[in-house]
Length: 350
Image (cartoon, rainbow, N blue to C red):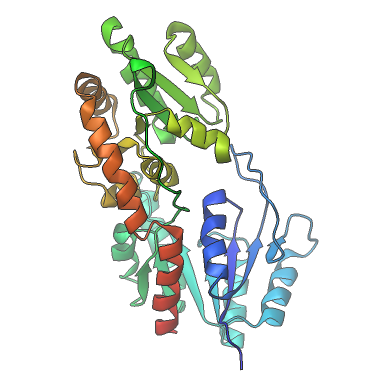
């Protein structure tokens, strides 16, 4: 008699926050994760490979390797991380032939391009309907995928919650703003440049703006920094180096044009930061406007108005940041709670 259920997860590539979730999940089930690649665009992650990790970068026949691992492992459930994985149609046919239960794990779709949105929704609807269920990243995504499959579980991305430390706010008597993410237009970085540039000299003297990440707007960032001495750039950071930057920051600025969920805001909230968050970021559904931070329209005008409010009334940031630590700890965005929730819900369905 097998004591543990078996799960295989198929993913394009590796990210640190997922590893935390997988470590919690591994305590409950026999887990194997198959990654198509170690590389992630604009990110330089360092991580320690585990025995249950399989990478396909050097495989001559990727499809054969995937099917062989699934066949030999004999999972009770396979979780397919996205509808665009290479060979996904062939893999799903294999599931059906072998009567293997499988779920898709999907973010919400981007409605900014309505034509593309409707085409993608049409193309993936049939695939989703053939699965045993969907792990939807957020309630908005859950509502969308319920149209195609009755078994939809809200399973947003999650992080490992850190032990609580006393947060020091307003380091150097400044309001310390922070952006973490890819230096690309979709992340709303151009709104950040324009909004902060529009501040008065007096307002600029009261702040710092720290920026962490890599991307194709790096040259524009360098020009922006030459004109603004309050801006500090750190390149790509992870682990303890990134935690140190969170610890000296007060409020995260995250004005993305679209993000299916948004892991950085969760990390910032866990570090007791307030947040300025675009309404088009999935994680905004767990945030209450003015209680945990600010939900804004993804544009320069809305961002500028909110930045000015934070500079004028900095004490609000402290109250919001302290609330955020508890919110993340108590929610399904806590990896430990998330892993338990998945097992409870998924195996009840299959």
